[in-house]
Structures are given as C-alpha cells and as structure tokens.
Image (cartoon, rainbow, N blue to C red; front, side, top):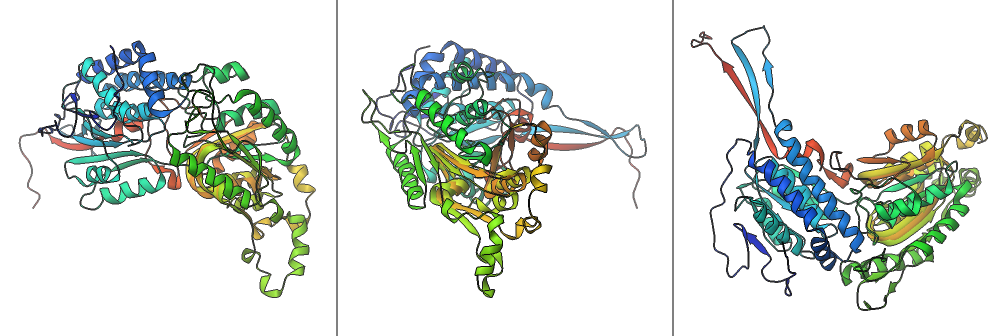
Length: 616
C-alpha cells in the first residue's frame, strides 16, 4: 500500500465512516452501537492490521518522523511494537472476555449465576504527541478487540498518524464507522468527555489534561476513564553497582532507545517495546538520577563521556542520528526555560542545555541533551552537621520542619521533557525522603533530561523515589553490600533523621520537564533516597541499580511507582500492565487489564425451574 503525507495538515485529517474527509465535506452519519456479542471478525482484522504494519514499515516510519521529529530508527521500533500490540489483543480477546459461572450457596442444582463481559458501545480515545502512532494503537487495539466502536482524537501537534491508521484499518477490512478520527484542541476533547453516548474515555497526556478529562467526564454522566499521565521518575544507583552498566542504564533512562542500537552499544537485551525517546519526550524517563556518594564523581565523568560519544544530533531521517527534534518551538522554549531556572537555582550545566542547529536542518527544534548537577547543593546539610545548626538557631526555629533544606530549583522540581540531567547529593535516607523539592525533580520534564541525585541508604532512596505525585515506573541497580556497617557508623543523633528533612525543591527536580535533561543528585543512605524519590506528586516509574537483589526487591516494595525497573529501565511489553500511582494516572494500559477495562460485567441469575416459591 502506498501512503502520501498531506502537504496541508489542516485539511483532510478527519477519518469518518471509513474514509478521509475534511470538516466541509463531512456529512453526519449514525454512530451505531455494536452488538454485545464478541465480534470474531475483529480477531482477523487485528492480524491483518499487524501484517499491514510490518509490510509497510518504512513508509509508516517515514510518516512518523515527519510528524513527530524522532529518529527514523526509533520510529521503526514504534511501528513494530504497535504491530505486536495488535497481534496480542487479537490473540487473547476471545479467551480473556469470557464470563464465569458462579454456583450459589446452598448447593442448588437449579439456580446459578453466570457473567458476561459486554462492550461499552462507543468509547473515546485522546492521544499524546510524543508517540502518536503507538498511543493510538494502544487505545484502538483493545477497544476494538472488546467489541467497541472508538472515536479517537490525536494531539493537535501530531494529527496525521491516526488518519493513516484509519486508512490501513479500512484496507484490512474493518467495517466502516468502527474507527473514527476527529481533530481539535481541548474543546474537542471536552466534547467527547461530556457526550452522553460516549460511555468511556481513555486519555494519554499531562496531569493537568488528565484532571480536566476526569472533571469533564463527570459533569453530566458517570463515565469511567483511564488516565496515563506524566511522571517525574527516578533511577537509584548504589555505589556497589558496576559503573559502566549503571551509566548505560542512565543513558537508556534519559536519552537512548533500548532497542537494537543500545543493545549494540551496551551488549544489553533488545526490547522493541521499550518507550524511550532520544529527545527525552517520554513520560517514564528517569530524569532524577540518585547516585550514592561513593561513586558520584566517577559515575558523572563516565556519563559525560558516554553522552559526548553516543548522542549524535541531526536530521531524524538519517540512520546515524540518535537525537532528533523536539515537537515544536514552544516546547523547546519551555525546556530552555527550565535550564535557565536550574541555573538561577544553583545548578551547574555540565553539558548541553542549549538549542543547536544541525547541518541541513538548521531551522528545526533541536536541543542538546543536558546534564545538571549542584541544584541547591549549597543549602544541603548532612545530619552530621545538623545539631550544630540547630544550636545556632533561635528557640523559635528548633522545629526542624520550619527550616528544611530545600532543593527548590525549578529544573529539579518540574518535568522538563527535554535533554537535561540534574545531579544532587544527599547524606541520609530520611533527608532524601523529603528533600527532592526542586521543580525538575518533582515535575515531569518530558525531555531527555537526566537528573542525577546521590543517596546513602535504601530507605532514603525509596522515600525519595516515592516522594512524587507520579507513579509510572522506577528502576533499581546495585551490587551486594551490607548497609549495617554504614548504619553502625552513624551517630545516635542521626538515627532520627526524619526530624530533619532535606528538600529537593528546585523546579527542575520537582516538575516534569519532558525534555533531554538529566539531573544528578547524590545520597548517602537507603532510607534517605527512598524518601526523596517518593517526595513527589508523581508515581509513574522508578529504577534501582544494584547487584544486591535482596535490596532491590526490598526497595521495589517501598517505591511509590506503577512500574519499577531493577537493573534495567524503560522496558515496555504489551502483555505487562503499564500505568502510574498518585497523579501519574488511573487504570492500566496494555495487558489483559486494558482489554477488560473496555468492557462492562453483567451478572445473570438463573433459575432453571419453571416454578418459583412465594417469598411471603
């Protein structure tokens, strides 16, 4: 099949009743509600769609690059993982959507209950711009497999991929009207949310957007929603880790796609389903990198060396390009604002952090991935020094909660969503629990920004990882080491470090940047880093890097994230649930949970006897 990219993206990007159309040429048509039986035709359509994506991989990937700006090698992986998604849901739907028979108490052979999973009818999907093709498939695949019709609204910044998917679906035999595309901004999304005939909404986007979807969906109806939102994820690297492997993981968590390329670079397993954009525009990116102090300097040097060697910025259509363009100029300017905020809040930009103009594509929206350290480090106090500080303060200041040390740089607190890496150090677990208040640490940057934060103990880093409103994913990387000796070496005055929280308040640490910004933060203890990691409204993802698997599993239970990675990062498989804790979302995508979420359960009581005893 041949597909051409429209020269004018403002027209011809609606897909209604099985064909492309414009607003002017579109006529209204009845939106029918599918019958409640599972439509077996959908199984065949899913397989045909899968084969169509595989057969037209290069053409579709080219379209995705033109729409989104990501490197061509990464776009290919997006299409391949989308094909896997369709194949998966086409294969499991019949088995997963079966009902159950339930025997009633008393052992009656004539009375029982059975359940049915029935589609909602018409559902809506609202997608994001960072993975326009894949996000659409993640919603359309399970919705159709469950027997629904779907109206999909792509991001206005990446409107074309959804229309291309519609044309492929029609060619594969999907009945007209089951998949439709409407374009627009927030007003269009609001209309879908409040419409009484749309029975469910699935949304991927920012936390603010998710809250709006939830509000609008409850204005006039009781309507279930699935929200896959932003994150401010953290990667914890203990000082017993292999530095080379830890650096490779940090690169994957911030800058590189863990597909064929990173497999070659780092001799790691290849996962086509991994979602990691080289421009940092990924909701799970671990832009807060907590590095234990024992290896902080060595790790930082090694990371800088790898970035200089591997992060090739250029035309996304070139095979050698590893860092593509950001989605548009306003988003690029937002990332640059986080960089300036980080500087104002004491951060030091070790590399990158500026707009660049690669040869041949000088006018594009390119950002050099940044590594940031030192955010509010001048304010950080170890617990060893805290008693002296307390003595020097007036009686009115004896409550340590009144004067927490805060890393409040904007780049540490907010999601940059750009190529920025921020490094922070810490002393104790309790300190790090409450310390990560910088905006780049607490908010989703949504760009290739890696925020490195050091820590001491498991408890510390677990609390720090969990200190966010997001909860999508986390990773753990470590080798065997017993922290009992470290604990024994601490003074009695340091045992209750929760009384002296150290805050990571920098904006770049707290907010989602959504750009290639890596923030490095140091830490001392487990307790400290756990508290610091968890000290955020997000809870999308977290990572732990250590060879001590007991520690890794222990911390994994403490991190407040929907996905936790141990000695890896940003793997995404279609048969594994994906979603966040706290403000990072509600519900799950991928896996059988998503398929069931597009259905309603009906319980049917049966009495096979013709007579019924009177109850009075």
